[in-house]
Amino acid sequence: MGRRRVSQVVTPRALPRFFVPRPALEAGTLPDAVAHQVHHVLRLRAGDWVCLLSGDGDAYLAQLGDRATIGHLQPAPLETELPFAITVLQAWTRAEKVEMAIRLCVQGGARAIYLAPSERSVARWDASKQAKYAARWQTIAQEEAELACRAQLPQVQVFRRWQDAFAGLPRPVFVLDEWEGALLLKQQARRMPIPAALSIVAGPEGGFSPAEREWMAAQPEVYAVSLGQRVLRTESAAFYALGQLAALWE
Image (tube, rainbow, N blue to C red):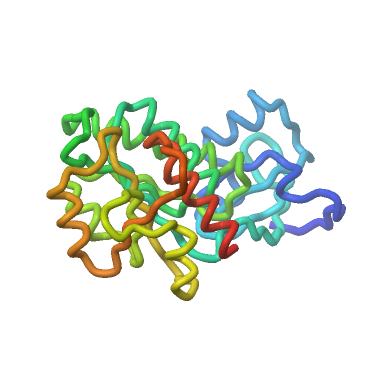
């Protein structure tokens, strides 16, 4: 693919943005869904510019060619990711609340979102619903990441067991629950160097059971933290924590 100089006023933030797998970028073609969005929804034409995101950190200014082709492609620096990779573990709740949590966490910079049932989760999904929801929520994460001008495509994973999801979390882990000894999140964060990766855990509407608290407290590098004076909804708590950490460390 050739290259063409683009005016410096054209930036990824000013253009429509789409995640495109790297093989398609290298082949110079748009996936069918992206081509439909570009040509039939946005009504863009050959010669117009868009921003294409590889999903693994790279961004490109792309000039559209005929139909589903990419005429010109050039790298465009995009520094919109947090300097630390955050994974959010969200307890199962109603589907609409999970959707809201995903949207907010992607906007807030989460690199991955895990979903798992805790003891007090009201929602229970069978295997078919899990697969259906997982596909839908990954699509929502992609849409929100494009809107937020994210360089990384966040991954959504659904687990059947809380312990399995928790075991895979990057350390340290901040559990949003005020068991004995919990500090304010900002106080706890100031006590440690900025990590390369970390995790935030949000429980269900009814909170964690005593057995869950005891089990999590026994795991390595796990800290119970408070978000402050106000009590937040389960779908917004992790987003609030992401904002606090970004303000402190970004």
